[in-house]
Image 1: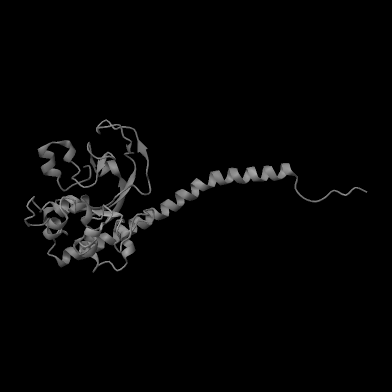
Image 2 (image 1 turned 135 degrees about the vertical axis):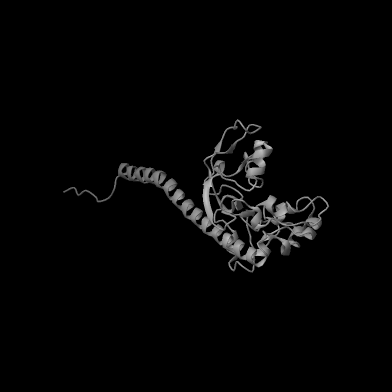
Length: 257
């Protein structure tokens, strides 16, 4: 008597494989978004740590914001800000100036160096390494360097009392929209052909009162006609408006009324 063998036919195996492939195609993006959301949460936690360190630093320094040392600026030259805030990969020369950078100033207040690293940023080594940045988060250039004229002469740093709205003025920012990177075509207010960050892309900021928050870039940052991404994280929010009265009244206020 003929006995049917147990097992799957080729057609059945192909159907199962096809179903698995379809499920994988559906679930992998979901898993990727969940992973990125977890990393975004870690980034927010990191920047809260930076906010706490900022408050402790200012308490120890008469409520003055961290400032670039003139000797550091003189040694580095025009690129001093990019190295001080961790925006550019370190070179052999700039690595010698690590003691003057923002990460070194905060070392007494931050015991875990990984606070400076976004989990989605693969180009960071907080310990300092040639060819790598030491931070995923930048200390805002114009707050750090506004007191340094061309001749590198020291004048008063930005003080807490200078800010009319500390809770609305960001001090640290992500260098990139690590967890929400979407682009759009040329914006009407920006030159060139793009692509630019989507105005709804979210980035995490640490504000001058120590709190950290994730917000859309177009609600916080300066719209830039010169920046490749369509926004400039360094300069005041209202600089692009070219209105002296609005500049004066909103110089230290990055959020819309």
